[in-house]
Structures are given as structure tokens and as C-alpha cells.
Length: 103
Image (cartoon, rainbow, N blue to C red; front, side, top):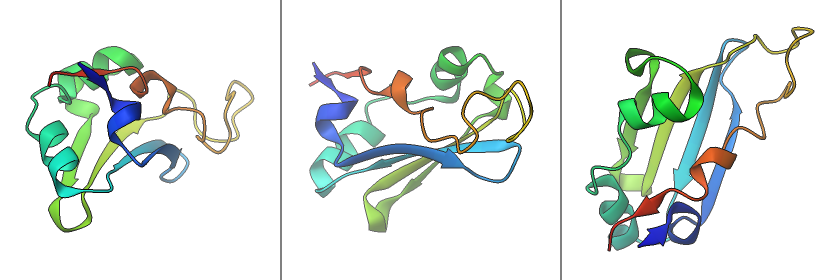
């Protein structure tokens, strides 16, 4: 098994407005992109369990021409809220790093 961190060239998160966070998975080559896209691992229910949201709140959009996958999830606290610990949403990708993708 290979981790998502090993397969992606860019794995990042950022705000998508004050209420949403986007997780970007970008790949250098088509083969790695298709391997992850078609693995069946990156699903709304899997992402929902990682982030403590419901699976109907998770959007997963593959972009074939860019070799990228965009995942959008709701923020637990809106950006800038006193309870928000990551105002830019830039640290939210960490749970994805060690996801194992079968060979």
C-alpha cells in the first residue's frame, strides 16, 4: 500500500468561503491520479468519518484534465469565529496524508 502523501504532488487545504473548506489532491501523472480516483478509497463516507461531518455534506469532484481531485467539506466553525483554530483552513489536509491506497 502507498499513502496519499506519496502519490500526490500537492495535498493542501484552504477556505472555500467562510463556511466551507476545500481539500485539493493534485498529481504529477495521469496514472497516479487514475489509481487514486478509481481505488474506491476516497468516498464521501470515508471523508465524512475523518472530518466528523455527514457524508451528504462531502463533495468529491475529480478533474481529469488537471489530474486533480477536489473535496469540499463544511467547516466546523466559520472562518474567524472565536472557536476557529485555523482561520485560513490551511491545516485541514493532515488527516488525508496517511490514507493508504491499495497497490
